[in-house]
Amino acid sequence: MDKIHSHRQVAAIKHSLFDQGYLDEQFIQLEELQDDANPNFVEEIVTLYYRDSSRLISNLDHTLERNPLDFNKLDTLMHQFKGSSSSIGAKRVKAECTLFREYCRARNGEGCRRSFQQMKKEYATLRKKLETYFQLARQAGPLETAYRPK
Amino acid sequence: MESKKSEGESSRSRISALVVDDDAIIRKIHKAMLQQVFNMDAKSVKDGKEAVDLHRCGANFDIIFMDKEMPIMDGHEATKELRGMGVKSMIVGITTRADEKDREEFLAAGSNHCFEKPLNRAKVEQVLHDHPNFPF
Image (cartoon, rainbow over all chains, first blue to last red; front, side, top):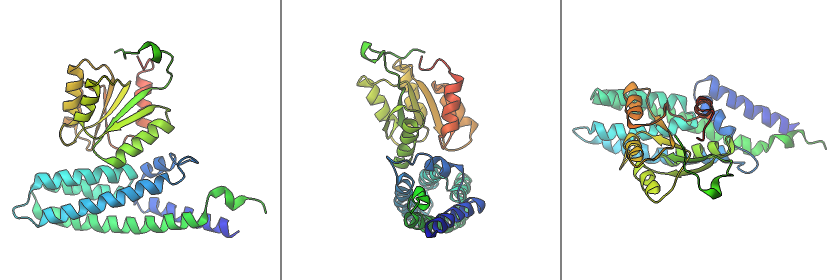
């Protein structure tokens, strides 16, 4: 029964990620690519995303410190971040990336800084929730083991 | 449009696909989807120039999924190059913003379709549905 309870917990966390708008349909598409041959596909992709995101956020931080701001470079960096965020279904992060790019195009430095802070918050929250989700999913094990007869 | 098939390939049932994107995550996801969901023989490169160079070396693909904004050579530039070389593959442009200008640029360069990221099952199905005789 513990296994069943664990799986229910994992399912509940996943539901809340969608209900609260952190993830979108793209995450489900990733899960559909996970199979026996690629049992950790989603977590591998998300781990790549974390690595990529850390690099991009650091580059964005440094670029935002410059004076005058290089809006083209900021836009290019955020374009990359938006692309990888949308590919894992990071809905809220993606929305902030879009807003940031609009501020870049408008050459609005203050808007860029505000949006970047918000984007970092959304990313940090999502990352924490996903780390919890994957940790519980690993502990719960494959779904079929929850129902294996004794 | 006709894909050039050698004698050895005439009995091939799998569609060959090339994913062109500078983002490693996106290359991994798109390749996995094309292979697992659509049973395509999928390869990937990281920018438009690599895609062009691959074709100059004689590679040929039934379908190319081409990102728009890439370093070294953009997607629409690579599309123009490939069409200029006589490449007849179906080219699907992938953009990161719902911008009509990006779409027009891709289509003007010679792509067959253009979608906003991310590429997903429904979009690939739409391409295959719109071209029932594909591969040509």
